[in-house]
Amino acid sequence: MNHSSTPYSPISCAFHDLLEALATVRRPAVIRYRDHDGAAQQVTATITDVFSRERAEFVSLSSGEALRLDQLVEVNGDKLSDY
Image (tube, rainbow, N blue to C red):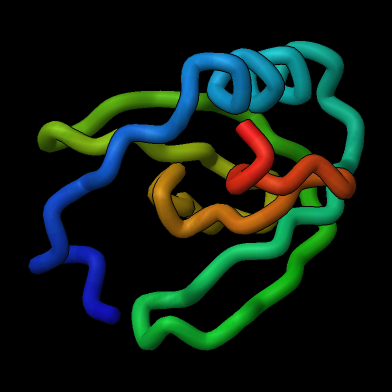
């Protein structure tokens, strides 16, 4: 799944609010996501920013990574699919 060629699928506002709250408190979070090939990945990192670029939304992580929000599966046990 190459996200650069896949249209962005907006996430729920409630989950977006959760991500912004985590960015505000700057505590490490366990983040599960799908990489560009669709493989499940997990990282523990601090969300440093939530931002938009080129009609898609992203989180910046303390690890230096930027993840598109529609790649996320779960953050600290909160599943995107539940929102």
